[in-house]
Image (cartoon, rainbow, N blue to C red):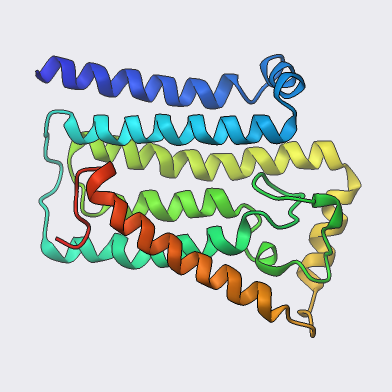
Amino acid sequence: MTETGWTNYIVAFAVFFASHMVLVRPPVRPLLVRALTPAGFTLCYSVLSLAILWWLIVAARDAPYVEIWAWSPWQNWVPLIAMVPFCVILAFGVGVPNPFSFGGMRNDRFDAARPGLVKWVRHPVLVALLIWSVAHLVPNGNLAHVILFGAFAVFSLLGMKMIDKRRQREMGPDWQRLVRAMNEAQGAHDVDWLSLLVRGLLAAITYVVLAGLHPYLIGVDPFA
């Protein structure tokens, strides 16, 4: 059982990182985009990534327990609190114009004078991943989870640097120009209150749904 648990964990880890290294790079990605369309590729890749992530988290849960640090009740509060900014960043940072990272939509409509959350968080998905991984590392002080969440934290930090370099190369002088204009933006006077309300509600709903599904998908009640 011990050997099987570690094997499943290692295989899940390998598949996760292979999917993120192979499927998003030439020559595989262009072929998939042509076959599925850009929107279809994004949808299929997102679903596949979430499925593999779920497998990896469950594999870490079922791996042999090797304690690195002891658990204390206060540690459970760290992810419960940290998941609030996690949900807010995703709700306000995904699906909006953002030429600097992935997860954006209609990037050609990006207005550096009204950058929204992108002004402070250029890579909302990776920042959310960093918050999620560090927060969940605190109450999970066993070897499998330390490796898992520690790797995701490093992955998110390195990912931001890699994407910045790639986008600078792709966008040329426009990248620096947009970053400078965005940093100098004083904030828009015409606030879209409807969008603010909708995305705020989406953040709250996301938190409730994730907390509610956690016992069923992961096997751990975050409020227990």
